[in-house]
Structures are given as structure tokens and as C-alpha cells.
Image 1 (tube, rainbow, N blue to C red):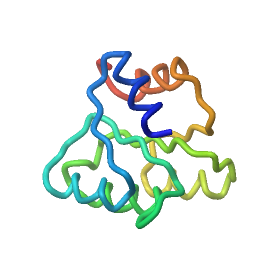
Image 2 (tube, rainbow, N blue to C red):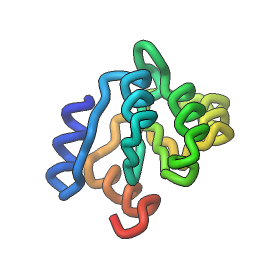
Image 3 (cartoon, one colour):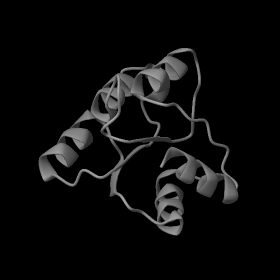
Length: 111
């Protein structure tokens, strides 16, 4: 799934940096990487997406960075928890590349 999303976004002109799990993503963010958008799955090894969202929002440089959850989870309670932690949006897989790009353009100014 990661390779598919990356390829699709690159085809649409986006520069994409990936991480294999939430812990690796957080480590990149803590070392100064400042993306225009974070897309996370909810179910990942080592650190799940909800914990990643919580930790990313705790970093001052990422306070206003849009965060999208792209996941198979569709439970309302989980969606609400992600929103309370600071997620900007929630997309349930499968999502077409066109739909993903539309959402990105809505949450990232100038995308």
C-alpha cells in the first residue's frame, strides 16, 4: 500500500518521503523533517497512527501541519479519537489516487 500511495502521489508531482512505521516517521520528524502533509495508517507496527498523530502534534514545528489518516478502520470512535488528537482528515481504504489528490488539495494550501 505504501508503494502504491507513493507512486500515485509522485505521478501527480508531489515529493514523497516514506517511513515503514510510526516510530520511524516520528524519528524523522524529531530530527527536523518538516513535511507539508503527513499521511498515516492507523494500524502499524512499533507505533500506530493514533500515537504518531499525538506525538507529531506535540512538536511545535508540526502544530499546524495537516495530518490525514488513510486506513481500513471505519469505526466512528476511532475517527473521533484521531480528530481529538489533531488529525485533519480520515480516509477509509481503498481510496482512488484521484480522490486522495483531491483531499490533499483541500488540506494543503497551494498543493
